[in-house]
Picture 1 (tube, rainbow, N blue to C red):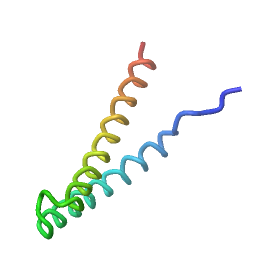
Picture 2: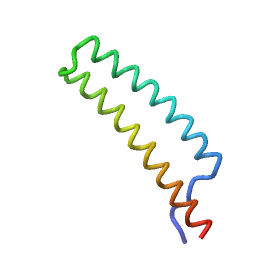
Picture 3: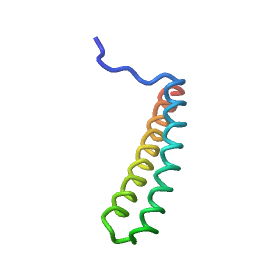
Picture 4: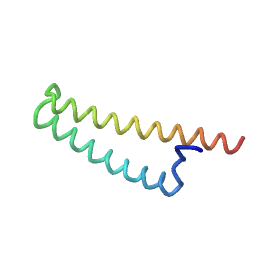
Length: 74
């Protein structure tokens, strides 16, 4: 019995929409922290890391979707 199942198309769509919204907020927070505390402050650095982590997750989902599409067309 398989323990995990891939996300449905609706779940993937919603996840991408949610991540896009999170990305926008993370960018805003990063700019705010940098403007308020300076680029070398730990708060600004962590906000930038958050922004980067969200971007990496989006890229990974895109790669996974591409691999899934390649597998279904082969």
